[in-house]
Length: 275
Image 1 (spheres, helix red, strand yellow):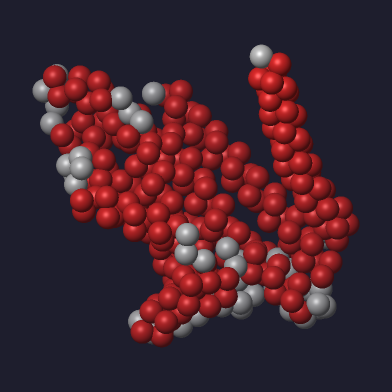
Image 2: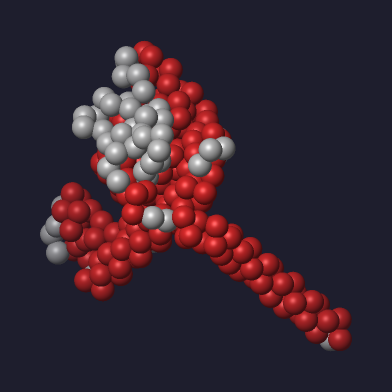
C-alpha cells in the first residue's frame, strides 16, 4: 500500500511537471515573439506596396488568405467525401479500406519539403504552371488531405449507429440518412479537422517556396507567384537585412492563427448547439 501511494505521488509530480514545462515553453515562445516583434509593428508594414525601403507584409497577408481558401476549396470536398465513403459505404473489414487508411497515415508523416519537390516537378514543370498560387494551393491541398480524411472519418464513426437505424426505420434512404442525419451530427469534428488543416496551411513554408515562389505582390490571378506570411518571415530572416520586420511579421502571423482558431471554434460550437 505504501509503495502504491509513493508511485501515485511520483506520477502526480511527473504529470504536473510535464504540464508546467509545456505551458512554460508556450508562454516563453509567445512572449519572446511579442517582445521582439510588437515594437516594430508600424503602419508602413501594412502598405499594399512592397519595396526595398518598406518590406510590407500586406501582400503576404492577402496571399495567405487566398492560399488558405483555395487549398480548403480543393481539399475539403475530397477529404469529407472520401471519409463518407470509407465510413458509410465501404464494407467493414474491407482490405482496400484498410490499405487506404494505412496509406493516408503514411502520407501524413511525409516531410513537407517532399510535397514541395513533388509540387514543383508535377504542377510546376510537368503541367507548366511554374511558380504560381495555383501550384501552391494544389500542393497544400494534397498535404492536408490525409488530415481532413482521418479527422472526418473519426467524426463520422463517432456518430451512434442508433441514429442511422432510427432514420432507416422511418423510411429514409442511405443517401438521405448520411446527409441529413450522420453528416450534421459529425460536423463539429469535421470542423475541428479543418481548423488543424488551416493551421498547417498558414504555417507552411518549405512546400510553398518550391511551388508558389517568393514574389511579394498581391496575386491578381491564380497563375501568379505569391508569398505567404510564413514565407515572407523566412525571406526576411534569411536575408538578414530586416530581421526586426521579420519578428513583427511573426506577431501578425500569430494573431492571424489565433483569430482563425477562435472563429472556427465558435462556428463549431454553434453547429454543435444547433444539433
